[in-house]
Length: 52
Image (tube, rainbow, N blue to C red; front, side, top):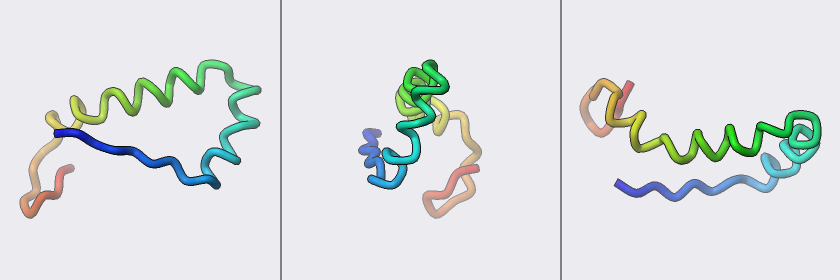
């Protein structure tokens, strides 16, 4: 399943100063986005398209 993640302008604005303070944040966020599909496969199905 493919996902399209859209970052809100407010998120981009607030994360910019954090990127200067925490250089690894960019790679951490990218790893999070890359692993969404893998993590959802491990989740417990609650029915009606919801997972835990």
